[in-house]
Image (cartoon, rainbow, N blue to C red; front, top):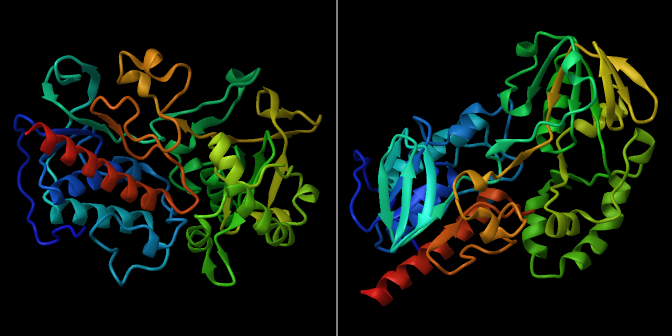
Length: 390
């Protein structure tokens, strides 16, 4: 399916019967464009005053961890002059261009407070606006509400404690001794950023980890994952295990515990994404980043760890991830998900009631690629539903 890349930007307007999309990030934009290609109208409700708001507040050095060839949204490749791994600002530039090219209608400053089912779906915003539609797509994503771990004595810490969501660059920390809590991709890159800036850096890593390189012999690992995607994930993990073990055979000696589950099994069964290594492990090997286990407590600037060690820090960056926070949107959240925090993997239209979810499935082949696949599937489903009811 080809999307029209020649359309022009227009001021948004709301029309009866349009599909309502919540969130103007990559998932929301991709769904709007895919719907347009199907001949269906949509309106995107965005809480902030700009699209791609989460990308704008990410730390400055961020680049895509997946190659641009696998990161474009439906119908519009990333520019040829972009590097293989586009920067945060280049991704924002691409998303702005994507919205203009596909005539995406966005209502800014519309923070959705409630999505409930009546005769149709009723979407209410915090400022009192009400939208109705037979179809709603929630595209707010996995990284909606930051997770902030707590430990005994945390309130006595004498320096700044921020979430990775608030981290911009090493200089802005105004600190010399930095502790990064977590071992996901944000944690790894923030620790690397601080180490490269000459700061004293440590990471507190609570559990076992998986690490994969961004490239193998010059080939992006996402490309390899795409080629392997039709095989059972446990078989893929078994095939890849010797290569990963050879590349990272010294993890235990670096103070890290290797997960018994392979990267794919951990992602598919526990939604745990591996660290895509862009240099963090090398800095740990060099001693530029020290690894501690979980935090047990802190007293003033002194942080005590589970292995009995302790050290002083000036600032702590909590990089323990996010949660979708769908309960803030759906009054029937508990009934709908029964203890889960989001739809089960692969479920885009769980209850078959006109409520769709895009961007809630982490993927080793790249989240933006996965978003594009989901957007096309959702748009096709909505178009078929509208055609059947016409």
